[in-house]
Amino acid sequence: MFNIPAAVTAITALVNKFVPDRDAQIKLQAEIETKLIEYQHQQLNNQAEINKVEAASPSFFVAGWRPACGWCGALGLLWQFFLAPIITWAATLSGSKVTLPVIPSEELFQLVLALLGLAGWRTLDKIKNVATTAVKK
Image 1 (cartoon, one colour):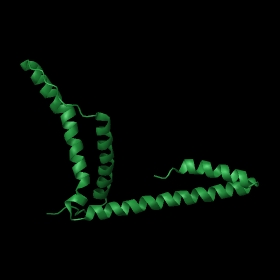
Image 2 (cartoon, one colour; image 1 turned 135 degrees about the horizontal axis):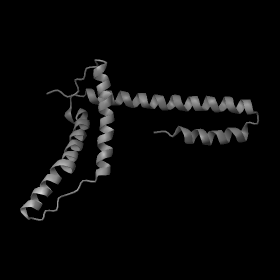
Image 3 (spheres, rainbow, N blue to C red; image 1 turned 30 degrees about the horizontal axis):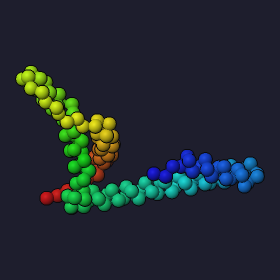
Image 4 (cartoon, rainbow, N blue to C red; image 1 turned 180 degrees about the vertical axis):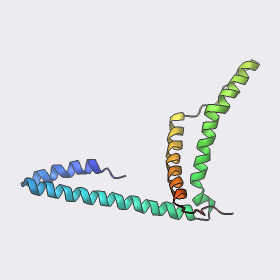
């Protein structure tokens, strides 16, 4: 994603250096910042359109990658917080020593939280009665 604050800071320094009039500086900086925000808004809209096209694809490999990531995240959470502790507890009670794999939870949480953000958008679609027919048999 384009870093607007960094660009504005750099451009402000250039404007202040080459435009002596303070009113002209302020006006030029506002125009540049507006153009940068419009550019970023257009980029986000373009990505949203790409996402819509991907989601509408009848191919499971195009439309199904997000649900697959969601299931991976759900299985990772199931393992990390439910299955692994129960298996460790059962193994300890039986007297055996078992070393279970540990999933790096920081990366897992990033994946799950990002997908929950996408799910939040999908919930908004459902509230607005936007139908999805992304994956069909």
